[in-house]
Structures are given as C-alpha cells and as structure tokens.
Image (tube, rainbow, N blue to C red):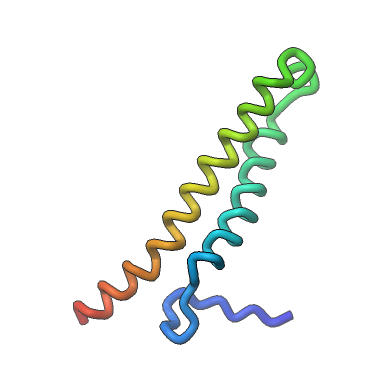
Length: 84
C-alpha cells in the first residue's frame, strides 16, 4: 500500500470527512495509551461507571483536539499561501 500523505499539497486537500476519520483513529489510540494502559483491574472493579466515564472523556477530548487541528490545517495553509 502506497500512502501519499502531504498536507501541503493543494491538489489533494484533507476534507472534513478525512479529518473525522483520522481523528477517530488517533483518538482511539490515545484513549488506549492514556487510560486503558495505565488502569488497574482494581480500579475497573471498584467503579466501572467512573472508568467508562474516563474512557469517554479521554476519547472525546482527543477526538476534538485532533479534528480541530486537522480541519484548521487547510485554512492555515491557504492563509500562508495568500501572504506569499
């Protein structure tokens, strides 16, 4: 599989759908690395509802941050190109 990822290529800009897909994948990885990897079985057994809330909160924050960053990249690139 050949990946041609170049965010500065104006011929193939990232759409909002692309940004949402990439954000979803990245948020899932961030949630696994930050919350699940550091959780203990005792924490999950003690309060499963609080653990699920932390999972959801970590995923939503990561998704929103990634989506805003990726969708704003196109706007930033167009501004810098206009200034040149």
